[in-house]
Length: 217
Image (tube, rainbow, N blue to C red):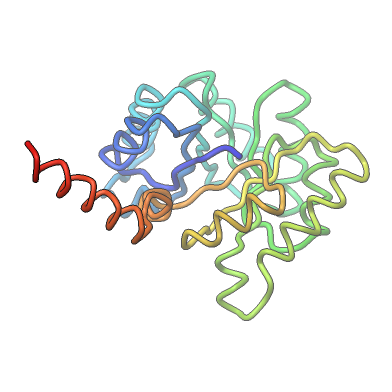
């Protein structure tokens, strides 16, 4: 399973990259705003900085909700770097834009997916990635992990090449469960990724090893 980090914070991206396990980055307008990055030129420049930091795909989201606007934005975004994945919302105009971009060979990420039907449309339009938001489904007492399982089944049934990118990942068990279910990618915050490192027996074992070594040295 690929590990993407969901942030626009360059320090967090660098920390994950330095671990040697980072495969890509996802961002959105909210994450950009959180870092104080506003204005089209500043946002485009920030995407370039992210691409310079990592080796893998970087999802950059369009703001327009009409077909022509999405296409115009997407055409600008892909000029930043071959790493750019055009992130498009799951709406009718978005599906049309995904088809347009896929026909041109551009990578796409269909975002704000909350149902199997939406994931099926994204795959038929040729999306590179589909992003089911499992944490937000959990927030309304709906089975986010069940959606991952259903999408995996349908994609395998028909051989769709669209990669399942589990988004809105909140904690370590989300990552583990998504890996069990066959999600191709997960994207989450740095704390979710580094949380995989932690186990009390690792800590106590290391403490004992070091204590025993120090007794005789």
